[in-house]
Amino acid sequence: MTRGTTLVDVSAKPRTIHDFYGFPDELYAKQYPANGHPQLAGEVATLLSPYQVETDDTWGLDHGAWALLDALFPAADVPVFQLSVDITQTMDWHLRIGQTLSELRDRGVLILGSGNIVHNLRALRFDGKAYDWALEFDRFVADRLNERNFAALADVSSMGQLMNMANPTLEHYAPALTIAGASSSKDELFFATEAIDLGSIAMRSFVLHGG
Image 1 (cartoon, rainbow, N blue to C red):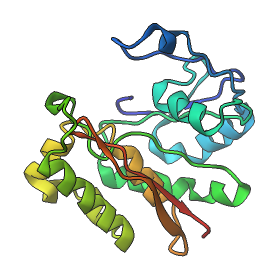
Image 2 (image 1 turned 60 degrees about the vertical axis):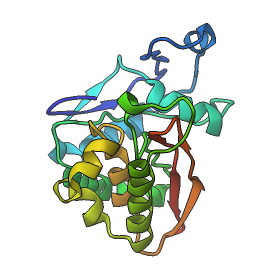
Image 3 (image 1 turned 90 degrees about the vertical axis):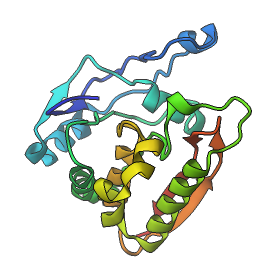
């Protein structure tokens, strides 16, 4: 997360960052040794120049990136670089940054966003039963994605208390807007997962492809 700027990792060998606490030792020993792509990352920084972008060669891959990549590409054989989430910006801004990135798709670049549509750690239930508000917000987002009504997903103020319960802070929600912004009207949408874990963590994953 950054404030007032968007960082683009231009390192050739991104380091694996263990930015979490209280987990098993095995996770802290985990390395994800994928190569970076300094040339493409530099091009992306130029493409995003209207968004107060800065390049960085010391950051690497935090758990928001490598935890997903390790499942998708366990051999770490796909070059990868990470963009930060500017948490000072509106959701409409994150939607627009996705629209700017969309041209990368024609070059075979996978644009991957990570987070949770519902992410309220203060309301965890270890019996696993999902809260009604978690189910409601998860369904609201799924329905708006199906309708391609991305403006509604960006209009946080209209969601009121439902959004406040589902996402007390927005860093987990914002990447979904960027991915939606990068989509085409011709894309097909499918949901890879739809579960809610620990009562208040939505694991819904969606893919927009083919456009």
